[in-house]
Image (cartoon, rainbow, N blue to C red; front, side):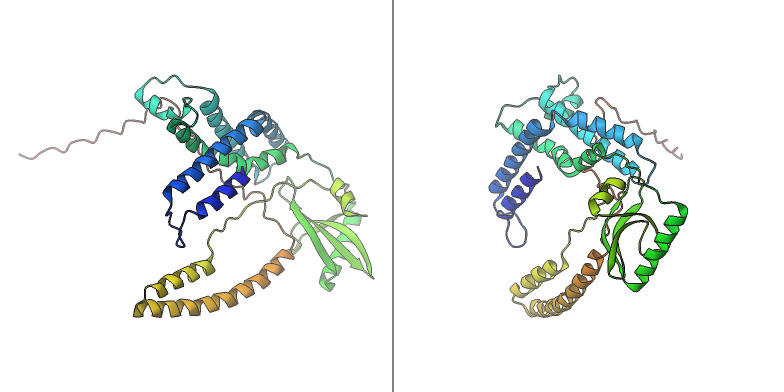
Length: 333
């Protein structure tokens, strides 16, 4: 469904002008209809037979994990996926028998619609947030199913201290090369590194932040495959959203200001051009910093759980509470 979403975004871009406004409404509506139909069919074919089993297995795996900060977020994701699966199943497989007017309105999407009809298009459009939720977040359920605790071979206290001191000395010399990092199920970061001594390199694993005091060496290995077999398995990393591009914003605003063909517009365009040059310089600086950031081989902690986009709907026949009656002030005679 991620592929379906990307193809739809491309089609929608063709319906907009350079300012992002939709200028071909019919083509945009057709693209969304194709997206919704394709997503429903993809879910029906590839996910519907396995969704409940996947969620049940993921919940069992979650219950077996040690307490950690990210478990609440994962539970929220699993609950949201369960809600979305129920909504999709209700709409596609369980025609409702409406009772009250409120229930008929609430369950309008649940009634089976004739293929290609306006009702079917509305039904599929209403299901899109739930389908997209599965496309975006089902990887957490899949990862939980594949998650199993692999106890690392512990070093003795004396060995751990000796290897940690060797690694700290190598870090001070600039000869501790970090290669990969992930978070274990308990929320602790694990980092693989090459410890270089006298032109000899040893693969070691660290627990904790390598750039903060308190990290320790928890093992040394002949190769990365062996390390992967002995160390705790990685959990899904967290997410960080960023959807604003300042450079594009300045370019678009500058083009708009210049197109005004006014004195003030030209003045603003000049100011934006100057800001653009400063931004270009800053972008180069940011790229250099980003390279340094990439060299840390760090991943976001798993408690930064993605937020489900689909929310549970209220229960059927739920009557909102009656607000308290406001007393009428007494009139003076």
